Amino acid sequence: QALGKAPTSSFVWEQQARLHELLGQHQAAEAAYGTALQLNGANIDGLAAHARHLALMGRLDLALPLARRAIEAVPPLEVPDWFHCVPAMAALSDNAFQQAERLAQRCGRVDTELGPILVLLAAQGANDASMLGQALPRILEASTFRSSGIMARLEYRIADNTLLEEVEAALREAGVPEKNLVSAY
Image 1 (cartoon, helix red, strand yellow):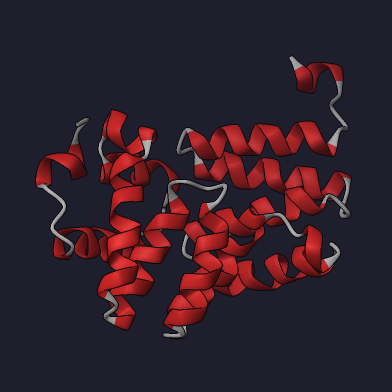
Image 2 (image 1 turned 135 degrees about the horizontal axis):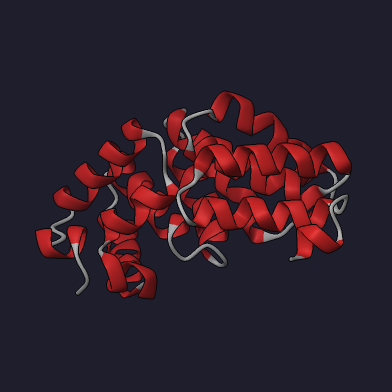
């Protein structure tokens, strides 16, 4: 309905993209993000959301410059915490685990699914039991994971099979029960 009333609104197209993303409709989300950013290239939230989506689709190479652009467009003390999800993923890919953990903690203040998962990956990479002990309860307590299973939920958000496999291996290594991975608990 919003698209019918405001077909040239970048904000409306961004919201449409986010809905497609949440439903696991990644190609439709990409198309909607593209439209949103064509309508308003200064839509910083749309740019950051698109960057996060690209990273979750396995396109970190395209996502990181967009995320940096979004972060640099905002005064340093006003950068939304979720803008740090993509830099956290980049730090993980660079094996900069302490930096990844710091950025993932910021991401996790808002993104209660992705943030703790990225902290878990950083903890395992750094072989840091304390950090792992902080991440695991947050993952297990997330209502969206509890209602469908951790991996079942992440399969909607993450289209990058390599990342999904890494996350699943990390969760298994951390001792998450099989039931919690695939079904409600």
